[in-house]
Image (tube, rainbow, N blue to C red):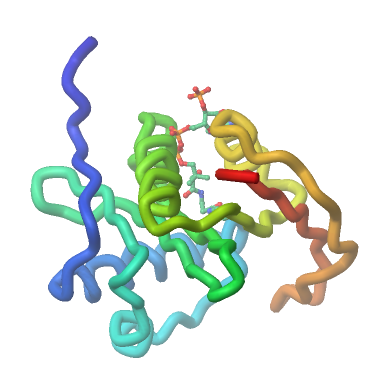
Amino acid sequence: MPEAPFQIRPMRDDDRLPLAVVFAAVAEERDGIASEPPVDIEARAASWTLDGTLVAVVSGAVVGSVHVDASRHGFGEIGMAVAREWRGRGVGSALLEAAIQWARERGLHKLSLSVFAHNTAAIGLYRKLGFVEEGRRVKQYRRSSGELWDAIDMGLLLSN
Ligand SMILES: CC(C)(COP(=O)(O)OP(=O)(O)OC[C@H]1O[C@@H](n2cnc3c(N)ncnc32)[C@H](O)[C@@H]1OP(=O)(O)O)[C@@H](O)C(=O)NCCC(=O)NCCS
């Protein structure tokens, strides 16, 4: 197997702006993440929480991230995205595996997330790493188009 061309590491302060640029480009797709354009890149860069955020890096450039928002109730909420040109090459899997490892080390008992019902790539990734569907939120998200989109809640138990 060829060596993976990307690395996963904890987010640093100097990743804020490049990660916000990736986030804004994914938002432009209006398909996978809840945020839609316009994204205020400076504000977004300032708002990242470093703790619980891991980035995927290719030749020094940030191409994706995962964030675990650790609740004081023992679960963590996942949010993630990979730059379009880097999808389908294992970056999402590596990010999510690292996030699961981070959550275990942090002592969380569960990871949770919400994904648009049509997002087959993300749902495939989550299933592959053991997440199961726990429910459907019908017409949960109002999009700027006026459409109302369903979301699937998924969870992964890390300990009982
Ligand atoms: C979801 C996302 C993070 C996946 O990242 P990725 O780097 O493409 O993922 P990988 O290459 O590691 O693929 C992981 C698995 O996802 C599934 N998958 C990926 N692309 C897929 C596609 N187009 N159709 C169906 N399943 C797909 C497969 O199960 C794949 O595993 P396999 O390669 O062993 O078959 C990426 O598509 C993305 O950033 N999308 C836009 C933002 C988004 O939707 N974020 C999630 C919000 S809940």
